[in-house]
Length: 313
Image 1 (cartoon, rainbow, N blue to C red):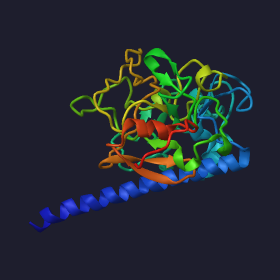
Image 2 (image 1 turned 135 degrees about the vertical axis):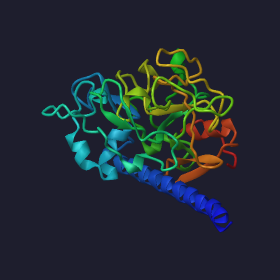
Image 3 (image 1 turned 135 degrees about the horizontal axis):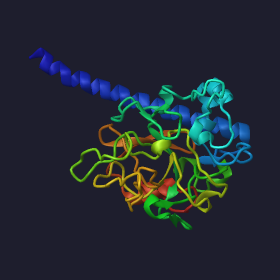
């Protein structure tokens, strides 16, 4: 009987500790993004090609998660990175050993301890590297922003937020105020069906990092909605937190609601925390937002300058 009483209490404490750990991770990401801004004069691109100023080879480059590595105590990994053609695929391959630098590498700052997804999966076109499944996604904007583009099965893409293709957003560009703009959100749970079951996809889990891993950026030099292709490791807000009933599509692009697993622009924010998920605002503060938060409020939060007044959330 005593054990029966203790187990729920222990589980509750563990869940609270995991949520706090997730909050701490996101605080570190917010500070890292600010540190990058202080050093470079703007936030990093949500995803970049390997063209100047982010490389010399062209092709599919790196994500924002690569660019902030020096600011989350991963400077040695960043210094070993090779920003040449398709570094998003090769993951900074060490050419002398042909071993991707991120193989089997777990960066705790990028991982919510409550995540229901596996720690690693085999990332496509990355020399068979086991890449970690990260728990956080950059916010590119809202599906209600002006000038959005519908990329068919890949979904609706916006450049109205802070982290998007080849972006270079400054504090001054966040017209609505940094405390009113979401720049990173949690995405640490599988898509779920109408019966709240994990949606099977072509890969271990359907998240915005897609089949190529947390290192993948974009392939073209166009900014925002002008690059005309998939946008990895970022999301345009189109659905509510932990929304169920999304089919997820497949690697061949059958999904038409932006939740394709290669990769959807509109995969929702999610978590295994009870009742909601964590987000980072532009001032580097972290908020826990409820599943019940109206979609329109999320969309207001995702936009850096839509001029809308945020309701309480």
